[in-house]
Length: 136
Image (cartoon, rainbow, N blue to C red):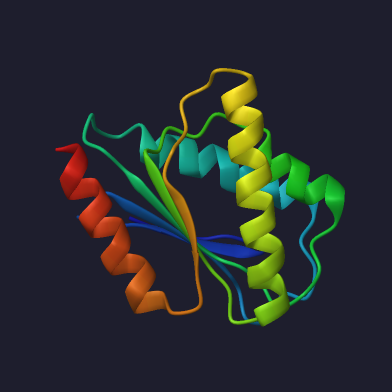
């Protein structure tokens, strides 16, 4: 399945990996399109009972706090996530955010889903495949 939305492209492939990619001509993310994207992602991730991965391509621009909160404050049904960034700074910030999020999950006694930052798309996708195989 492929969805070409206002700001993002969402693909859900035969390996049960959902890809979220920002369109090349987009320079800012906004709330309403984010809500639409989350709805479509929820639908795709609920399509079967197999373990699922999420592959997120981070943009090269700053994401406003309210938009980031919109994407983060949802209950997407996935088991493992790979986040790809071409920016060194973004990758460092992402690593810190992942560590903080894991600590919050531990404090709340929530399930910790494997999540990892990458600078390379192929390595991220391969890692997702390996992690999903472990869950089968």
